[in-house]
Image (cartoon, rainbow, N blue to C red):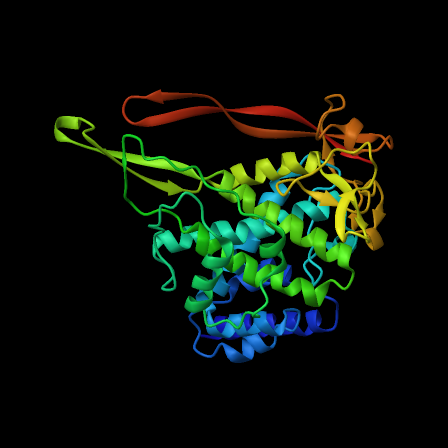
Length: 389
Protein backbone atom coordinates (compact mmCIF):
# COMPACT_ATOMS: atom_id res chain seq x y z
CA UNK A 1 0.00 0.00 0.00
CA UNK A 2 2.83 2.37 0.89
CA UNK A 3 4.59 1.54 -2.40
CA UNK A 4 1.47 2.40 -4.42
CA UNK A 5 1.08 5.70 -2.55
CA UNK A 6 4.75 6.48 -3.23
CA UNK A 7 4.36 5.76 -6.96
CA UNK A 8 1.24 7.91 -7.11
CA UNK A 9 3.09 10.80 -5.39
CA UNK A 10 5.91 10.58 -7.95
CA UNK A 11 3.34 10.61 -10.73
CA UNK A 12 1.65 13.73 -9.32
CA UNK A 13 5.01 15.52 -9.10
CA UNK A 14 5.71 14.63 -12.74
CA UNK A 15 2.30 15.98 -13.74
CA UNK A 16 3.01 19.28 -12.00
CA UNK A 17 6.27 19.58 -13.95
CA UNK A 18 4.47 18.76 -17.20
CA UNK A 19 1.78 21.35 -16.54
CA UNK A 20 4.36 24.13 -16.42
CA UNK A 21 5.77 23.31 -19.87
CA UNK A 22 4.51 22.75 -23.38
CA UNK A 23 3.65 19.07 -23.61
CA UNK A 24 2.07 16.52 -25.89
CA UNK A 25 0.12 13.28 -25.66
CA UNK A 26 3.37 11.37 -26.26
CA UNK A 27 4.10 12.06 -22.58
CA UNK A 28 1.92 9.03 -21.86
CA UNK A 29 4.82 6.90 -23.11
CA UNK A 30 7.17 8.05 -20.38
CA UNK A 31 8.20 5.32 -17.90
CA UNK A 32 6.51 7.24 -15.07
CA UNK A 33 3.09 6.62 -16.60
CA UNK A 34 3.56 2.87 -17.03
CA UNK A 35 2.87 2.31 -13.32
CA UNK A 36 -0.60 3.86 -13.68
CA UNK A 37 -3.36 1.27 -13.60
CA UNK A 38 -6.73 1.46 -15.33
CA UNK A 39 -8.25 -0.52 -12.45
CA UNK A 40 -7.79 2.16 -9.79
CA UNK A 41 -11.14 3.26 -8.42
CA UNK A 42 -11.20 7.02 -8.89
CA UNK A 43 -9.99 7.97 -12.37
CA UNK A 44 -11.26 11.56 -12.44
CA UNK A 45 -8.52 13.31 -10.38
CA UNK A 46 -5.80 11.55 -12.35
CA UNK A 47 -7.37 12.21 -15.76
CA UNK A 48 -8.16 15.84 -14.93
CA UNK A 49 -4.53 16.43 -14.01
CA UNK A 50 -3.34 15.48 -17.53
CA UNK A 51 -3.38 19.05 -18.78
CA UNK A 52 -1.07 18.22 -21.68
CA UNK A 53 -4.05 16.39 -23.22
CA UNK A 54 -7.02 18.05 -24.87
CA UNK A 55 -10.32 18.19 -22.98
CA UNK A 56 -11.71 15.40 -25.17
CA UNK A 57 -8.68 13.20 -24.48
CA UNK A 58 -9.03 13.74 -20.73
CA UNK A 59 -12.70 12.78 -20.99
CA UNK A 60 -11.59 9.70 -22.91
CA UNK A 61 -9.30 8.84 -19.99
CA UNK A 62 -12.22 9.05 -17.54
CA UNK A 63 -14.79 7.11 -19.55
CA UNK A 64 -12.58 4.54 -21.30
CA UNK A 65 -9.79 3.82 -18.79
CA UNK A 66 -8.89 0.41 -20.20
CA UNK A 67 -8.51 1.73 -23.75
CA UNK A 68 -6.58 4.69 -22.38
CA UNK A 69 -4.25 2.31 -20.57
CA UNK A 70 -3.58 0.40 -23.81
CA UNK A 71 -2.89 3.70 -25.61
CA UNK A 72 -0.30 4.51 -22.94
CA UNK A 73 1.22 1.05 -23.39
CA UNK A 74 1.30 1.48 -27.16
CA UNK A 75 3.29 4.70 -26.76
CA UNK A 76 5.97 2.79 -24.88
CA UNK A 77 6.01 0.20 -27.68
CA UNK A 78 6.47 2.97 -30.25
CA UNK A 79 9.35 4.57 -28.34
CA UNK A 80 11.17 1.24 -28.01
CA UNK A 81 10.64 0.48 -31.70
CA UNK A 82 11.90 3.93 -32.70
CA UNK A 83 15.05 3.42 -30.64
CA UNK A 84 15.61 0.01 -32.22
CA UNK A 85 15.20 1.28 -35.79
CA UNK A 86 17.64 4.19 -35.26
CA UNK A 87 20.04 2.53 -32.86
CA UNK A 88 22.97 2.90 -35.29
CA UNK A 89 22.17 6.42 -36.54
CA UNK A 90 23.31 9.85 -35.40
CA UNK A 91 19.76 10.48 -34.21
CA UNK A 92 18.94 7.42 -32.13
CA UNK A 93 15.46 8.46 -31.02
CA UNK A 94 16.62 9.64 -27.63
CA UNK A 95 13.85 10.59 -25.25
CA UNK A 96 13.83 13.17 -22.50
CA UNK A 97 12.14 12.03 -19.30
CA UNK A 98 10.09 15.20 -19.27
CA UNK A 99 7.04 16.68 -20.95
CA UNK A 100 8.44 17.15 -24.44
CA UNK A 101 9.60 13.49 -24.60
CA UNK A 102 11.47 13.77 -27.92
CA UNK A 103 12.85 17.22 -27.16
CA UNK A 104 12.39 20.33 -29.29
CA UNK A 105 12.84 18.25 -32.43
CA UNK A 106 9.09 17.75 -32.76
CA UNK A 107 8.59 21.50 -33.15
CA UNK A 108 10.40 21.20 -36.49
CA UNK A 109 8.64 19.02 -39.04
CA UNK A 110 11.67 16.99 -40.11
CA UNK A 111 11.77 13.43 -41.52
CA UNK A 112 12.41 12.23 -37.94
CA UNK A 113 9.25 13.94 -36.72
CA UNK A 114 7.30 12.41 -39.63
CA UNK A 115 8.52 8.97 -38.56
CA UNK A 116 7.47 9.59 -34.94
CA UNK A 117 3.96 10.67 -35.96
CA UNK A 118 3.50 7.66 -38.25
CA UNK A 119 4.96 5.18 -35.76
CA UNK A 120 2.89 6.34 -32.77
CA UNK A 121 -0.32 6.40 -34.80
CA UNK A 122 0.42 2.90 -36.10
CA UNK A 123 1.26 1.62 -32.62
CA UNK A 124 -2.05 2.78 -31.15
CA UNK A 125 -3.99 1.11 -33.98
CA UNK A 126 -1.92 -2.08 -33.72
CA UNK A 127 -2.21 -2.38 -29.93
CA UNK A 128 -5.97 -1.71 -29.82
CA UNK A 129 -6.69 -4.15 -32.68
CA UNK A 130 -4.69 -6.91 -30.95
CA UNK A 131 -6.30 -6.18 -27.57
CA UNK A 132 -9.77 -6.53 -29.13
CA UNK A 133 -8.98 -10.00 -30.45
CA UNK A 134 -7.44 -11.05 -27.12
CA UNK A 135 -10.62 -10.12 -25.25
CA UNK A 136 -8.97 -7.36 -23.23
CA UNK A 137 -11.67 -4.83 -24.12
CA UNK A 138 -15.43 -5.04 -23.70
CA UNK A 139 -16.04 -2.39 -26.38
CA UNK A 140 -14.81 -4.63 -29.20
CA UNK A 141 -13.89 -8.22 -30.02
CA UNK A 142 -13.07 -10.31 -33.06
CA UNK A 143 -13.56 -8.65 -36.42
CA UNK A 144 -15.98 -10.99 -38.15
CA UNK A 145 -16.93 -8.76 -41.08
CA UNK A 146 -15.53 -9.97 -44.39
CA UNK A 147 -16.30 -7.15 -46.76
CA UNK A 148 -14.08 -6.33 -49.76
CA UNK A 149 -13.12 -3.08 -48.09
CA UNK A 150 -14.37 -1.02 -45.23
CA UNK A 151 -15.63 2.52 -45.11
CA UNK A 152 -13.82 4.62 -42.51
CA UNK A 153 -16.83 6.88 -42.04
CA UNK A 154 -19.23 3.99 -41.42
CA UNK A 155 -16.73 2.32 -39.11
CA UNK A 156 -16.23 5.59 -37.22
CA UNK A 157 -19.99 5.69 -36.51
CA UNK A 158 -19.68 2.23 -34.97
CA UNK A 159 -16.86 3.39 -32.72
CA UNK A 160 -18.81 6.47 -31.65
CA UNK A 161 -21.67 4.24 -30.56
CA UNK A 162 -19.34 2.00 -28.57
CA UNK A 163 -17.18 4.59 -26.86
CA UNK A 164 -18.30 7.09 -24.25
CA UNK A 165 -16.24 9.73 -26.00
CA UNK A 166 -17.63 12.97 -27.44
CA UNK A 167 -16.47 13.19 -31.03
CA UNK A 168 -17.31 16.26 -33.05
CA UNK A 169 -20.07 15.91 -35.60
CA UNK A 170 -17.54 17.11 -38.14
CA UNK A 171 -15.54 14.12 -39.46
CA UNK A 172 -11.86 13.98 -38.61
CA UNK A 173 -9.65 15.60 -41.24
CA UNK A 174 -7.79 12.36 -41.79
CA UNK A 175 -11.08 10.70 -42.69
CA UNK A 176 -12.00 13.32 -45.28
CA UNK A 177 -8.50 13.75 -46.70
CA UNK A 178 -7.33 10.17 -47.00
CA UNK A 179 -8.80 6.97 -48.37
CA UNK A 180 -8.43 3.73 -46.49
CA UNK A 181 -6.32 1.01 -48.07
CA UNK A 182 -8.52 -2.00 -48.94
CA UNK A 183 -7.37 -5.21 -47.33
CA UNK A 184 -6.82 -8.27 -49.52
CA UNK A 185 -9.93 -10.36 -49.82
CA UNK A 186 -10.19 -13.91 -51.04
CA UNK A 187 -11.78 -17.05 -49.77
CA UNK A 188 -10.60 -19.52 -52.39
CA UNK A 189 -10.28 -22.89 -50.69
CA UNK A 190 -11.01 -21.76 -47.15
CA UNK A 191 -13.71 -20.46 -44.86
CA UNK A 192 -13.54 -17.40 -42.67
CA UNK A 193 -13.40 -18.21 -38.97
CA UNK A 194 -11.17 -17.82 -35.95
CA UNK A 195 -10.72 -14.41 -34.36
CA UNK A 196 -9.45 -11.67 -36.64
CA UNK A 197 -7.75 -8.62 -35.15
CA UNK A 198 -10.22 -5.75 -35.14
CA UNK A 199 -8.44 -3.28 -37.40
CA UNK A 200 -11.50 -1.11 -37.86
CA UNK A 201 -11.89 -0.46 -34.15
CA UNK A 202 -8.13 0.06 -33.78
CA UNK A 203 -8.12 2.52 -36.67
CA UNK A 204 -10.95 4.56 -35.26
CA UNK A 205 -9.48 4.77 -31.77
CA UNK A 206 -6.27 6.03 -33.39
CA UNK A 207 -8.18 8.56 -35.48
CA UNK A 208 -10.44 9.81 -32.70
CA UNK A 209 -7.74 10.06 -30.04
CA UNK A 210 -4.83 11.37 -32.15
CA UNK A 211 -6.13 13.25 -35.18
CA UNK A 212 -8.81 15.20 -33.40
CA UNK A 213 -6.25 17.07 -31.31
CA UNK A 214 -4.52 18.57 -34.36
CA UNK A 215 -7.13 21.34 -34.53
CA UNK A 216 -6.02 22.34 -31.00
CA UNK A 217 -2.28 21.79 -31.27
CA UNK A 218 -1.40 22.93 -34.82
CA UNK A 219 -2.38 26.47 -35.72
CA UNK A 220 -0.59 26.54 -39.08
CA UNK A 221 -2.52 24.74 -41.80
CA UNK A 222 0.56 23.20 -43.42
CA UNK A 223 1.68 21.72 -40.09
CA UNK A 224 -1.77 20.30 -39.43
CA UNK A 225 -1.98 18.73 -42.89
CA UNK A 226 1.52 17.22 -42.63
CA UNK A 227 0.82 15.75 -39.19
CA UNK A 228 -2.49 14.25 -40.33
CA UNK A 229 -0.88 12.83 -43.44
CA UNK A 230 1.87 11.08 -41.47
CA UNK A 231 -0.65 9.77 -38.91
CA UNK A 232 -2.60 8.20 -41.75
CA UNK A 233 0.55 6.80 -43.38
CA UNK A 234 1.24 4.94 -40.14
CA UNK A 235 -2.25 3.44 -40.04
CA UNK A 236 -2.02 2.35 -43.66
CA UNK A 237 1.29 0.63 -42.91
CA UNK A 238 -0.60 -1.44 -40.32
CA UNK A 239 -3.32 -2.36 -42.82
CA UNK A 240 -0.81 -3.34 -45.51
CA UNK A 241 0.83 -5.84 -43.19
CA UNK A 242 -2.28 -7.82 -42.28
CA UNK A 243 -1.55 -11.54 -42.59
CA UNK A 244 -3.82 -14.46 -43.33
CA UNK A 245 -3.51 -17.15 -40.64
CA UNK A 246 -5.10 -20.51 -41.33
CA UNK A 247 -5.74 -23.78 -39.50
CA UNK A 248 -6.56 -27.09 -41.13
CA UNK A 249 -9.32 -29.41 -39.93
CA UNK A 250 -9.82 -32.97 -41.08
CA UNK A 251 -9.44 -36.66 -40.30
CA UNK A 252 -5.91 -38.01 -39.72
CA UNK A 253 -4.25 -34.71 -40.42
CA UNK A 254 -5.99 -34.09 -43.73
CA UNK A 255 -6.98 -30.55 -44.65
CA UNK A 256 -10.55 -31.07 -45.73
CA UNK A 257 -11.50 -27.74 -44.20
CA UNK A 258 -9.25 -24.73 -43.88
CA UNK A 259 -10.37 -21.94 -41.55
CA UNK A 260 -8.60 -18.59 -41.84
CA UNK A 261 -8.59 -15.26 -40.09
CA UNK A 262 -6.64 -12.00 -40.25
CA UNK A 263 -3.85 -11.26 -37.81
CA UNK A 264 -1.36 -8.46 -37.42
CA UNK A 265 2.36 -9.32 -37.35
CA UNK A 266 4.83 -8.31 -34.69
CA UNK A 267 5.15 -4.53 -34.55
CA UNK A 268 8.81 -4.83 -35.63
CA UNK A 269 7.67 -5.51 -39.22
CA UNK A 270 5.60 -2.31 -39.29
CA UNK A 271 8.44 -0.33 -37.74
CA UNK A 272 10.83 -1.59 -40.42
CA UNK A 273 8.46 -0.57 -43.20
CA UNK A 274 8.06 2.92 -41.78
CA UNK A 275 11.86 3.14 -41.42
CA UNK A 276 12.08 2.50 -45.16
CA UNK A 277 9.46 5.17 -45.79
CA UNK A 278 11.48 7.58 -43.65
CA UNK A 279 14.50 7.11 -45.91
CA UNK A 280 12.47 8.20 -48.96
CA UNK A 281 10.33 10.92 -47.32
CA UNK A 282 9.36 13.92 -49.46
CA UNK A 283 9.80 17.57 -48.49
CA UNK A 284 6.57 19.49 -49.14
CA UNK A 285 5.13 22.99 -49.31
CA UNK A 286 1.58 24.29 -49.21
CA UNK A 287 -0.07 25.46 -52.41
CA UNK A 288 -2.23 28.14 -50.85
CA UNK A 289 -4.37 28.71 -53.91
CA UNK A 290 -5.40 25.04 -54.10
CA UNK A 291 -4.89 24.36 -50.37
CA UNK A 292 -2.90 21.23 -51.22
CA UNK A 293 0.47 19.85 -50.22
CA UNK A 294 2.96 19.54 -53.07
CA UNK A 295 6.65 18.52 -53.32
CA UNK A 296 8.82 21.48 -52.41
CA UNK A 297 10.78 21.18 -55.65
CA UNK A 298 9.62 19.90 -59.01
CA UNK A 299 12.59 17.52 -59.07
CA UNK A 300 11.34 15.73 -55.94
CA UNK A 301 9.27 12.58 -56.23
CA UNK A 302 5.51 12.73 -55.98
CA UNK A 303 4.05 11.22 -52.82
CA UNK A 304 0.89 9.34 -51.96
CA UNK A 305 -0.97 8.60 -48.74
CA UNK A 306 1.46 5.82 -47.80
CA UNK A 307 4.58 8.00 -47.94
CA UNK A 308 6.04 10.17 -45.20
CA UNK A 309 6.34 13.90 -45.76
CA UNK A 310 8.14 16.73 -43.96
CA UNK A 311 8.67 20.50 -44.08
CA UNK A 312 12.11 21.20 -42.59
CA UNK A 313 15.45 19.52 -43.30
CA UNK A 314 17.01 17.50 -40.49
CA UNK A 315 19.82 18.96 -38.39
CA UNK A 316 23.11 17.08 -38.58
CA UNK A 317 22.67 15.67 -35.03
CA UNK A 318 26.47 15.78 -34.71
CA UNK A 319 26.63 18.43 -31.99
CA UNK A 320 24.51 18.94 -28.92
CA UNK A 321 21.79 21.49 -29.61
CA UNK A 322 18.78 21.21 -27.33
CA UNK A 323 16.99 23.97 -29.25
CA UNK A 324 16.92 21.62 -32.25
CA UNK A 325 16.38 18.50 -30.14
CA UNK A 326 19.87 17.13 -30.78
CA UNK A 327 21.96 15.46 -28.06
CA UNK A 328 24.96 15.09 -30.35
CA UNK A 329 27.06 11.95 -30.76
CA UNK A 330 29.87 12.62 -28.28
CA UNK A 331 30.45 9.52 -26.16
CA UNK A 332 28.44 7.23 -28.48
CA UNK A 333 29.91 3.76 -28.96
CA UNK A 334 30.84 3.00 -32.56
CA UNK A 335 32.54 0.30 -34.64
CA UNK A 336 35.43 0.43 -37.09
CA UNK A 337 33.55 -0.55 -40.23
CA UNK A 338 33.67 2.05 -42.98
CA UNK A 339 30.73 4.33 -43.80
CA UNK A 340 28.07 1.99 -42.44
CA UNK A 341 25.37 2.59 -39.83
CA UNK A 342 26.99 2.54 -36.40
CA UNK A 343 30.50 3.08 -37.77
CA UNK A 344 32.86 5.61 -36.23
CA UNK A 345 33.22 7.33 -39.61
CA UNK A 346 29.47 8.04 -39.61
CA UNK A 347 28.67 8.61 -35.95
CA UNK A 348 31.70 10.66 -34.95
CA UNK A 349 31.25 13.37 -37.61
CA UNK A 350 35.01 13.61 -38.39
CA UNK A 351 35.85 14.35 -34.74
CA UNK A 352 37.63 11.04 -34.34
CA UNK A 353 37.20 8.43 -31.64
CA UNK A 354 39.00 7.03 -28.65
CA UNK A 355 39.60 3.37 -27.95
CA UNK A 356 39.25 1.84 -24.51
CA UNK A 357 40.73 -1.61 -23.92
CA UNK A 358 39.40 -3.78 -21.15
CA UNK A 359 40.17 -7.32 -20.04
CA UNK A 360 37.33 -9.49 -18.86
CA UNK A 361 37.22 -12.96 -17.41
CA UNK A 362 34.58 -15.34 -18.76
CA UNK A 363 33.73 -19.04 -19.07
CA UNK A 364 35.24 -20.84 -22.06
CA UNK A 365 35.84 -24.35 -23.43
CA UNK A 366 32.76 -25.64 -21.65
CA UNK A 367 32.15 -29.41 -21.79
CA UNK A 368 29.31 -31.61 -20.64
CA UNK A 369 30.26 -34.40 -18.26
CA UNK A 370 28.01 -37.40 -17.60
CA UNK A 371 25.92 -36.97 -15.62
CA UNK A 372 24.91 -34.09 -15.29
CA UNK A 373 27.48 -31.36 -15.10
CA UNK A 374 28.95 -28.67 -17.35
CA UNK A 375 32.58 -27.80 -16.62
CA UNK A 376 34.21 -24.65 -17.98
CA UNK A 377 37.61 -23.02 -17.88
CA UNK A 378 38.07 -19.37 -17.04
CA UNK A 379 39.64 -17.36 -19.83
CA UNK A 380 40.91 -13.81 -20.03
CA UNK A 381 39.53 -11.90 -22.99
CA UNK A 382 40.72 -8.56 -24.39
CA UNK A 383 37.87 -6.28 -25.44
CA UNK A 384 38.23 -3.10 -27.46
CA UNK A 385 35.48 -0.50 -27.51
CA UNK A 386 35.45 2.73 -29.47
CA UNK A 387 33.69 5.96 -28.46
CA UNK A 388 33.18 9.20 -30.40
CA UNK A 389 35.18 12.21 -29.20
